[in-house]
Amino acid sequence: MTTVGILGGGQLARMMALSGAPLGLRFLVLDNVADACAGQFAPMVVGDYTDEAALAEFASRIDVATFDFENVPASSAEWLSARVPVFPSPRALAVSQDRLAEKTLFRELGIPVPGFVDVPDRAALDAAVAELGTPCILKTRRLGYDGKGQFRIKTMADVDAAWDALGEQAARVGLILEAFVPFQRELSVVAVRGRDGEFRSWPLTENWHVDGVLSASLAPARVDAAMAAKAIAHARALAEAMDYVGVFALELFCRDGELLANEIAPRVHNSGHWTIEGAEISQFQNHLRAVLGLPLGDTRMVGHACMLNWIGEMPDADAVLREPGGHWHDYGKSARAGRKVGHATLRADAQAELADALQRVGAALGREAQVLPVIHALQT
Ligand code: ATP
Ligand code: MG
Ligand code: MG
Image 1 (cartoon, rainbow, N blue to C red):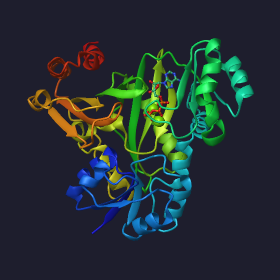
Image 2 (image 1 turned 120 degrees about the vertical axis):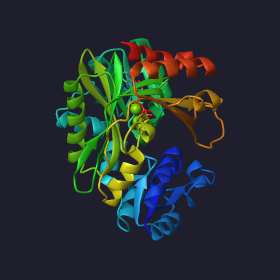
Image 3 (image 1 turned 180 degrees about the vertical axis):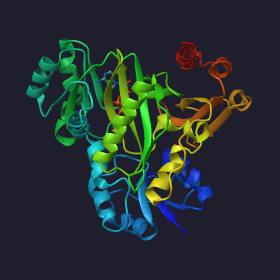
Image 4 (image 1 turned 90 degrees about the horizontal axis):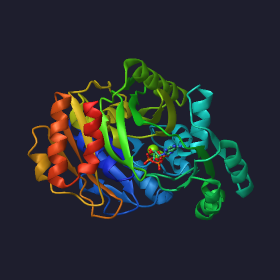
């Protein structure tokens, strides 16, 4: 019996455990909160990621370790990897934990990236704004997620406010200034690389964010074959450069037909949740196959799929459950503003059918604004 250890016990760990059950896998989750939602399906060690006693107990009960949470301290990942195989490797994790390191890697690999400048102190911020111009975005280098740790600088008049908001974090987690990209669309490549280097990608996903948080994803994205091939080639080059093992996502901005890389998520990704029902093998199961050295599964799509995130609280399930291609995911979390508590995936054989289903669900739940951009995309 193989036991997979997962650092972090959120919905990603939960969906991983659910997808691994048919493979006969066991799971053990390490999280610092006792009611982490993956704990409803997997035994847990409750403890901090930096607590050596908790890490030692965790390591002693697992065959391989992976992550649900990308901000596990690199030192903890290193400590574990001296005792059990850890995938992705602590080195790959470290690169994608730091916006400066990952953007530098993008550039080295010839992957186009928005202008960016390291901002170690206040004087550097002034110089960086002068270099990149406005609008631009000040971001923490580390520990940001769901748009947290970011400040949008629209004009020079906002520079003081940006420093007031984030300046104190410069010493602890670092800051980076990025040019603001007036993109038309956001895309992601969700891909997997096996222990033996085999690489597979699911079809590209188109994403819509609201206030920096993913709201909806559509697959396949509306991109021509050449652009899709280029995006996937970027993802592959990154995976090979990092000797990455497992599933990851590459987030891209699409501006005037050009792709610019935003960030890598070194784990299964919210924009890949549609693969549970919309692809032959999901990102969750392929991640497990990759970290265990098993053959990777087919990433082919089964029709068209749209995922809608439920943020803050769960809506009523009935409208989705009534849909022929409707799939419901309640993460079993308590409601809290801004928290990802669940999602739904609508799947259909044809685009028009998917648009109709989105229309019905949006109207029934009073979430017209959430489904509208996707319906529009499906009609153009
Ligand atoms: P995630 O939850 O995806 O890890 P994050 O906190 O790491 O989010 P980003 O992905 O950098 O943050 O930014 C969140 C969203 O903010 C992006 O998906 C995009 O919509 C917007 N955004 C970020 N950077 C830029 C930029 N340079 N230009 C334009 N929009 C941006
Ligand atoms: Mg991120
Ligand atoms: Mg992002």
